[in-house]
Amino acid sequence: MMTFDVLTLFPGMFSSPLQESILGRASQQQLLQVRLHNLRDWAEGKHQTTDDTPYGGGDGMVMKPEPIARAIAELKARAPRSKVLLMTPQGIPFSHQKACNLAQEEGLIFLCGRYEGFDERVRQALVDEEYSIGDYVLTGGELPAMVMIDAISRFIPGVLGCSDSVEADSFSDGLLEYPQYTRPAVFEGMAVPEVLLSGDHGKIARWRREQQLLRTCQKRPDLLETAELDNEDKKILEQLQSKALESDK
Ligand code: 4FV
View 1 (cartoon, helix red, strand yellow):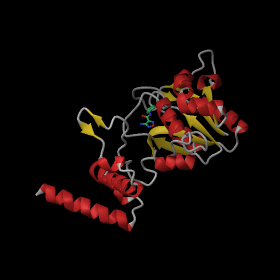
View 2 (cartoon, helix red, strand yellow; view 1 turned 180 degrees about the vertical axis):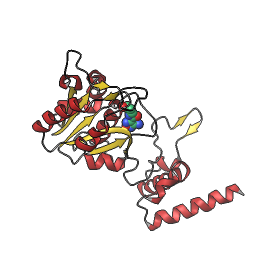
View 3 (tube, helix red, strand yellow; view 1 turned 60 degrees about the vertical axis):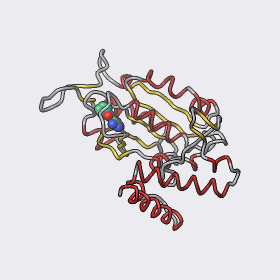
View 4 (cartoon, helix red, strand yellow; view 1 turned 45 degrees about the vertical axis):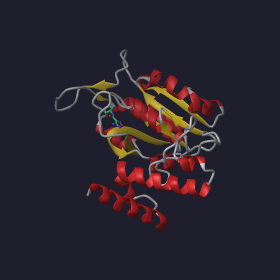
């Protein structure tokens, strides 16, 4: 069973998102467990202080290293092979592939920051990997931790029902997903592409691959550099690019 330990000053933020739908069911089925820990429990003094003013001056507060060191020591004692992850804008960009890799781990400890972030020695001495979910600044590391737990959990066998699988995901082959349609066949004058009603699975698979390549070309051409493309794909891409050049004329 995959264990997600979360160190945070706001454990309450995690209650509903992780209890609903797929993740809630996966917890009930013991496919994963999320253990929430309030960092303040490892802070000292009657005010259980977890932050202090920055050396060298400046605005905001910095999270103290000692409560974090005590907390991680206790959590690692319970789950020695767990990896400590820090959510920060300075981290490695989180991705589908990173989610897949992290899902192989036995346990993960998520360190959620607040204020201006952590004393640098936390990074140096206590953290295995740092991840960023995007180039913007949030008020805390809790939402990034939830995002990562959700994305990673989808790779745990049995978490996704049989109807949906990570194999069919965007990014699973490095491309964006093809468009999906369901009933009604015509909606506000917009008809479902004929090929999808043809029952010809060969034609449908080719159309879907063309759509993946077209969308990725239009919306995320950067992904084409790393996507797994076979010769058929490359031919389709050439056609798409020559069509695009035509239409530009
Ligand atoms: C963040 C991100 C992020 C920075 C200061 C929490 C905040 C506060 N984490 N991807 N973007 N973290 O903005 O992961 O401690």
